[in-house]
Length: 217
View 1 (tube, one colour):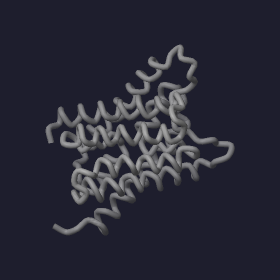
View 2 (cartoon, helix red, strand yellow):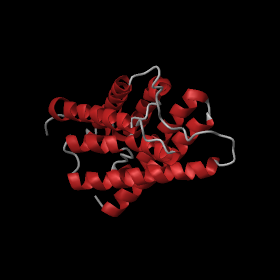
View 3 (cartoon, rainbow, N blue to C red):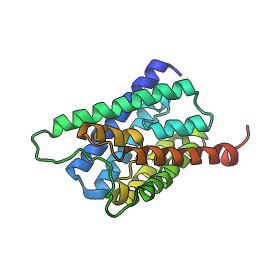
View 4 (cartoon, one colour):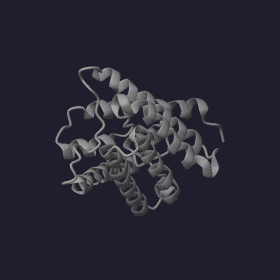
């Protein structure tokens, strides 16, 4: 792996996911289906554009899953996390600038209603949905079994996860997706739920792949 190219790819990809995905959420483009497609299509596009550079994680939880599965070193994982959170933050900042004066309120932040949903329930929803996402990644892109269709399968998985989880938690499945808009909006109070939940889900999918589903060489 060429580090400069990989980190550049992760930064731009994460920036795009927040700028486009959170932007679609803020604007209400196409309702829930539009938001789901905006996120999924970013994943598909960047999987094919940058997959050969970095694997197109563009998600700290995915990188954590790769680390648990033994597919990336700790040093590389830390580098990925730094640029992913930086890309997510800059993406949210750029989005706030783009929406300034438009009358749109908010940055498409992923949040849950504390009055109707306990934090633990939100955490478990994010864990289950992230499990589905990382499970698809492991058994398509990492295993190599899906060939050129891996990017499409991963993007579609994100779409169906958002279609179900969007009304409940915003279906982040990605700590950087939550962190950027939350930081720029000045409210990080729920971030821990999305961090813990997504890492649990990603770790579970990675362990399942590493010890049960991965085929022996």
